[in-house]
Image (cartoon, rainbow, N blue to C red; front, side):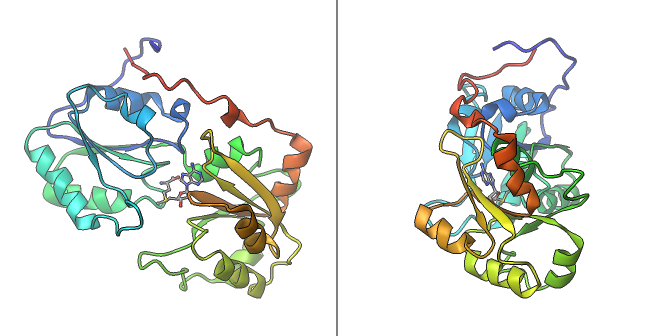
Length: 272
Ligand SMILES: C[S@@+](CC[C@H](N)C(=O)[O-])C[C@H]1O[C@@H](n2cnc3c(N)ncnc32)[C@H](O)[C@@H]1O
């Protein structure tokens, strides 16, 4: 598909562009992301970036996987950063492609700092984060004036894979009527226990949204108290978001269709 002719930047050799690919549906790539893909010499991509998106890279581009594979540990962050630096020093246009937005629970900041330290020029191209685009596809609004003027995004596990202990759970629950938890499946029982202990009612509406924006998207609406059992019974698997708040109840009233039933065409997009 030819996009309207826009004045898009050229990708200089020796640069690294840290690019967000959005939550999965190729139609949620930004024009900047497509423009970057069209020009890249090397694409270093994460687990949640689909094949249709990678097809936007030129035929001769090197595609390197840098995500988690089959339960094995992910490549060390330092090794990924060093690889970006190495490729840039070879004069390649290096595209670091991440699911969602590179600066939202995506280690983009660590890579940007490593590039800065190594003196490699880079730019950051934001993407639609799963917690925003994914929930919209699921028909769950993040805000409504009657329910909340604040949303909190948090991760279900920290760098060492544990539920973040440094969070002030009571304060967070008091302050934020809507919580969106990334990477929530591994510790779902413990997260639910933390939230209940922090004062949230078992009856608080909640939902799990897995493979959001993709053809296999699943939306499970439940309550905080039932969430872990319902997720197990339904076989909800990562990648998934766990959202807790009255906005979940609006899903039924909004009656959103399932846009993932009509995914964007898988053919590659081209700018220019
Ligand atoms: C390492 S984080 C990366 C987040 C990403 N940078 C973003 O902005 O969306 C991975 C987590 O994002 C969430 N996620 C990413 N893509 C998703 C999708 N298509 N459906 C549901 N959750 C998704 C899941 O919670 C997953 O465990």
